[in-house]
Image (cartoon, rainbow, N blue to C red):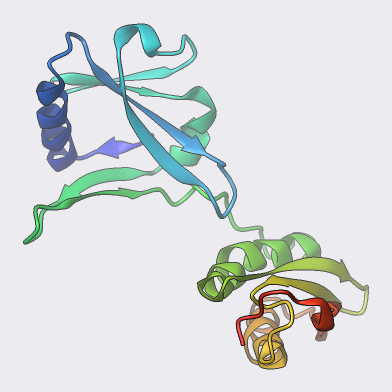
Length: 192
């Protein structure tokens, strides 16, 4: 379960005290768990707002309710408040938030989709692009579909061969080739 470090507990106690509501607690949940878009959501929680299925964690001076469906994704998570020159920030480290990496013996399709979601698409997102898996043949030929800023981009071949294909081949030795199935002539907002 999540480790709420002393620095975070102190920070939360101060926030709760400022609200001046008797019995005020916090509620933690994960939105879109097990996906690359997963994120932790922390909110104030009055006693009547807690769900019956929530897990109650008693901390020093306040309670933390954790949504039951979020619990598996918060295993081995840590929450701390890290001070800096501007005051500080709350840091949540949750290694299982976005799901777990497939084993080396998992189907090639699963391993490709995981790498696209966790490594490739976050990189392409800086240019407004994304890529999705269309198919994988038995002889290791992967076909992808580019979207967003990559759809119609003049640099897509470089992205495909030097970025996506290189990343996939390095981590999944069964892959022999990566192809693009996108009709780039129909791209409406290419990055280049």
